[in-house]
Image 1 (tube, rainbow, N blue to C red):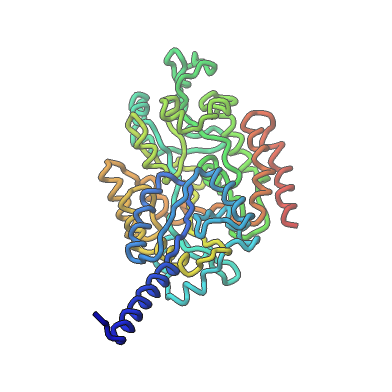
Image 2 (image 1 turned 90 degrees about the vertical axis):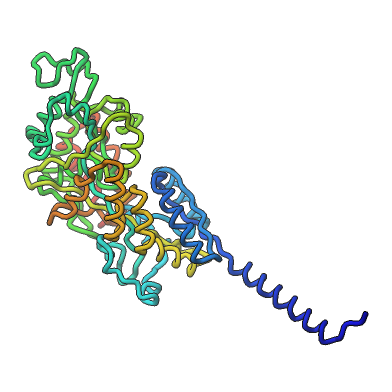
Length: 442
C-alpha cells in the first residue's frame, strides 16, 4: 500500500513539532535550590514550594536545611566556591557582609517591573535596601518573651498578677529577681529566699540564660534587659559606632553573669553545654528568655505545661528586639528570573497564609499573623506575650545592622564568655573591647 507524499510531509511536521515542544519544555525545566536553617519551619515552606510548583510547573524547588551554625558555615563556603543555593534565608546581622562582597542580587528592578506592593509588610521593607538597591523582602518577624514551666510556677506560688507586675533593674534585680530566687531550689527543697539555702547544691534553677551570641547582639539573652534601661547598642542601621562602654550595658551584663557567679540562681557554662532548652526539658530550670520562633518546638517537646510571660519592665519599661528575615537571591545564580519568581511568592500573602496555618512563626503580612495566632490558639497556646510587645509604641528595637559583623563577633564573643565565667568583669573588659570594635570602622 502506497502512502501519498503529502501524508509523509504532515507526519514529519508533526514529529518535528512534538520533538521541538519536548525540547523546549526540557530547556524550560528549572530547579531552584533554596536553603534555610530552621527545621521547624521546613514543612511550612515545603508546602509553599508545592503550591508554587503547582502554579509554575516548569520550576521545582529543592529545599536544603541545616542547623544555624552549619548553615552559615556552609553558605559561606559555597558562596566562595560559587556553588551557593539560588535562594537562601538571610538575617539582618549577616546581610551587610554578604552585600559588601557582592554576593546578593539586587531585586529592585524586579520589584518595580512586577509592581510589588511593599506597603503590605508589618516589618520595614527598607531594612533590606541600601543605596537604592534592594536585597530582600520581609518574610516574618519575631520578638522575645520568657518560656516558663507552669507547674514550677504554681508550686512556687507565682501568680499571673506577679508576672504582669514584674520589675527589673541591674542593681538588685527588682521583683523579677525575687521570683527567680523563689523558683531556685537546693537539694533540701529550700528556695533561695531561705536563709539556709545552699547555692552549692541547686537542683532547680529559677532562671537560665546563656552568654549571648555576639553576632546578633545577644538577641534572646541579655539584650532585652539592657534595652529596658534605655541602652542602645548602636544608633541605627549602618552606623559605625558601638556602645559597649555604656555603664548601663556594663551593669546589665554583670548582673546576668552574677545570677550564677554570685547568687547561684542560674546555671553556668558547664551546665549550659547542652543548651538552655535541654535544661528546661529536663526540669532543671524554671524559665528562660527565647524568641517566638521556638514556640512550636518547645511546647511540642516539653512533658509539662509551658507558659509564656512578658519580659519584666526595666527602668525604661519593657523592651524586646524585633527581628525579621528575608530571602536573598545569590548574585551568581544561573536562573535569576525563576529565583525571583520564587522569592516573590515567598514574600506574598498566599505563602504567608500557608506558613501562618502551620503555627511556627509570625509572617510579615497581617493575614498570616492572624492565621498563625489562630493555629496557636487551636493548640491551647496564648502567644500574646510575643505579639503584644510588638504593638506597643517604642516597645521594640532593631538588632545591629552594620558592617564588620564577623570581626565584631570574633572580638566580642570570647570577652563575653570570660565575663560570664568570672574570668574578667564587665567593667574591666567592655570599655576596652568597645575601642577595638569601633576601630574596625576607622
